[in-house]
Length: 408
Image (tube, rainbow, N blue to C red; front, side):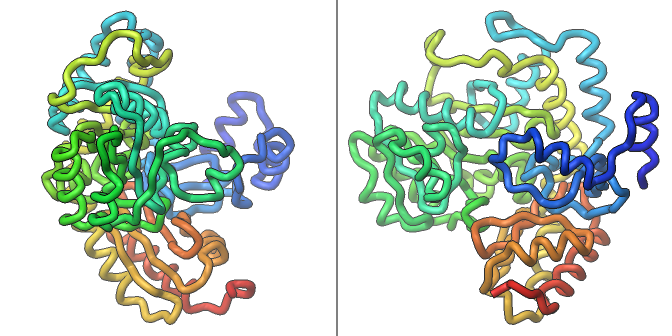
């Protein structure tokens, strides 16, 4: 298991580091803003990860949703290699062939009309908020409780969780939060100063909460009626994750602005804010990005989109996700309150805090995420097999039915 890692270090005349040594070194120099698990990941392939000591894991973290097409996918490696030999940087003051192809592809897949390319999910949200204010001449934004949209000031102001917000207050004024899936509360919150309603189609960090169809369609109707824009945050749900290429397609929604990132580039940092034809063109200089739309990321994204379509990953996520949720629902454990999700975005809500159970999963070879204090979240690469998911189910069953000290 360690062979590739060891060979790479020998070729570079570096001494291979153990997981413990890597952790010690990184702990000396890292900023401290991340809560780190006691493991050093050095290699991945498909839906599997390996640490520096050769230990193998089934990955249900999936790069926090950025690894939909799997780790070390050779399609992405080849796209990056080929493009890096031609052109890496090309700001949007110039036209570029890779960018042009990608923008056309994204519009074709989404039904949107225009694309602003950037580098991350929070940047896509910031762009969406700025464009909404600019296009409507209004200043207020309505978002949802338990929603998560990013950590820069505009996106953070739309994010609900107090622990993210409190250290940086005062935040951007003009934001309101309503209970998710509560249409009457949203209707009361939207007024003639509301530039946009910003929502996740499935809340990720907030507990893997799918939006009800009647709620999402109702939000769209209210926005149309009151002249506000509908911004959908598909940073985590996009690119096949929920069983459609994009989650809004389950309910036939027509967003005014669509924010994308994570798996858009097959793991390469990238984001995008797409505008519908109703928005028209934006004026030059109102926003920008040095690295946004660079040819290297665009080449990776084009290869990713082709791979997703050619391998029918949305359909695969729909089928495997339904099977996975059924298997998890069949686990008999007094700890489980509810299993929910859409496609291969799955959460198990527990009756206790989830952290010790995630640690125990990792000790048994499965990586998973929290979603709030009590939800165990699974975002495996969409290339994962049913046999691999079956092993995940077995480990979850074992962990939830084992006695874990300190779980109270």
